[in-house]
Image 1 (cartoon, helix red, strand yellow):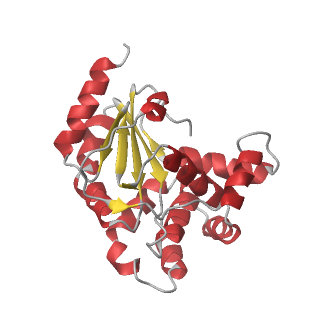
Image 2 (tube, one colour; image 1 turned 90 degrees about the vertical axis):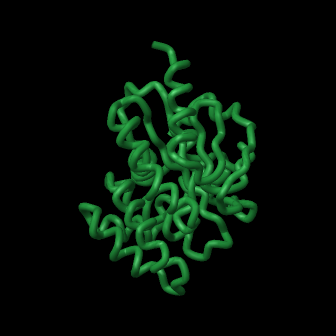
Length: 230
């Protein structure tokens, strides 16, 4: 996914209600493999195709939308759950479905959240089949049920395969770690931007930190839309 150019310029920090990402760090070997293959010449065409589909699957909205809302989140973060369930639906209804805004999800699984990484892998493997958003909904809705499990993979398998078209393909994606590189690339980019907690959001060049209410996002989106070229 191409980051909105303004995202690379954002440096502001605000008060927040969120989960600390100080412990989040990418797997350097995986990150290196992304730099060597996906970001340059493709080596494994099947893996590249999976990554491309997974990447596109976590974007929602019309191509003609003038403004991006970039969501940086952790499926095990309770503040991310609160925002996803209490604020996101109205934003999607008022801005995304009306064609004004595109929303994109970036992965920041926090290492102190024991089941965050497999949750993100489940979501991104579902994204490869166009099912990122329903699986994201299900992961947040059931967060209390899986956050402390010791063997969480069967739970995620059952949850995700209710939404994907091809369960065998989903399981192969999980088994072979097909989307792990994409997740770790997200973490690397987010870390370079100086983001230190989830949820964090970018609207144009504005960073919004924490599970802020709908009104905070509406103000930022309306301002970005007013400033967008016609």
